[in-house]
Image 1 (cartoon, each protein chain N blue to C red):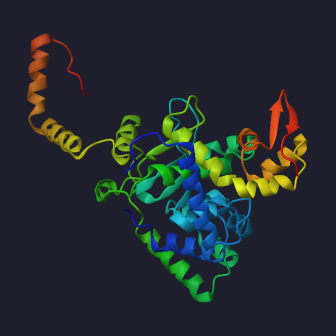
Image 2: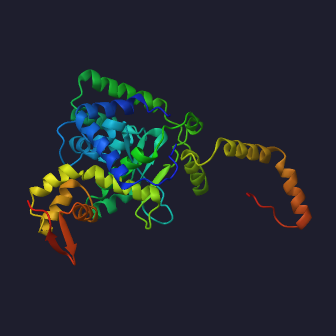
Image 3: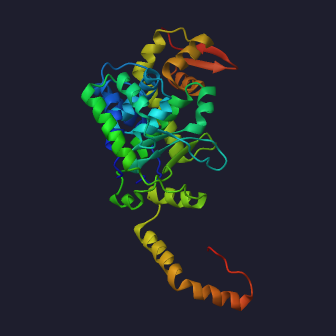
Length: 205
Length: 140
């Protein structure tokens, strides 16, 4: 049901995210940010968003998971406090689970009907633990590409003054991502450089 | 794949037709959005009052409201037999089975062991106790 763990290059992860977004925006135009990831999950993959209590894994708070056989994208009820404390983390977790679905889930085999009467624990469980296993890193990267696709992202950046932290925090709220994910993306795309909390703008508006 | 009840599917369909997210519907119906998720995933069947609030929020037609109430009643009459929460070890095992980490052969082997334990394994354990004088292990 899960693809075996394997190396996936960054350009491949970006291409899969871009392909997913193209399909979504064709179904739900216009193409613009923020990406409504919950609607994308339901529209493209017919995934069910399931809020439920999930056991911790290795004493780490579980944020979400995927239950492939029921096409469920799980969010942990018990992580509500975490999601409130860290703005963007809920949306990012959803994107992360969608990325798992795109990258790591194969069609469920018929044999899972063996346990039809049991609501099995999610096959993929995601926590905030470090270091992250290979699949988790891939899902994180792909989630960033899903929520911050380069072309739309740069268009939005051009409309903002990225030299100010309040603008960056507002942008984070707008996109529904974590501040670290946003700063990584801004730096990777050469929009800004951050050094000791000082912002240097690299891209002219 | 397990089939969700008609009621659960109907709630989701009506919400999606109105292009509402779980949060949107939760706000409109004055119900916690995680509760809406549990309704759509067949964990709970709400009260008739809550069904009416959800129906109003998704602008259901009178026929759709009637269908919601009928299917909710049907769902209450035939509750999903919820198994007791599996133990931690069982959860690990189930997670591995569901993730495809257990091959068909390994699964057959597990069944074979379970069946053997239920029939002829017990006498062998007794033999072991007699041999070393210690309590037998209940699981291997």
